[in-house]
Length: 79
Image (cartoon, rainbow, N blue to C red; front, side):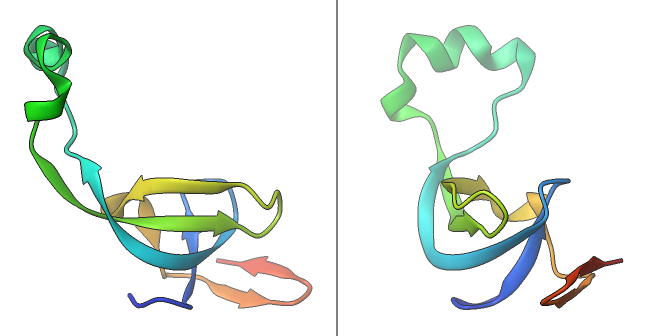
């Protein structure tokens, strides 16, 4: 994946990749207390800032929630 690619984010439709960002690593339920006690010390990973093309929202998301396994055409998204 690279900046400018259009991918699908979860079930929210097409998303434009804007830039790579540092994002907080996922936290398991049993780790929640540790995370909440000091969120600034929690590990980070590289994710993406995306713009959802259907709603214009801009979000930071984890890479593993993005899929390039679809075809985007002006009239819609086709799996």
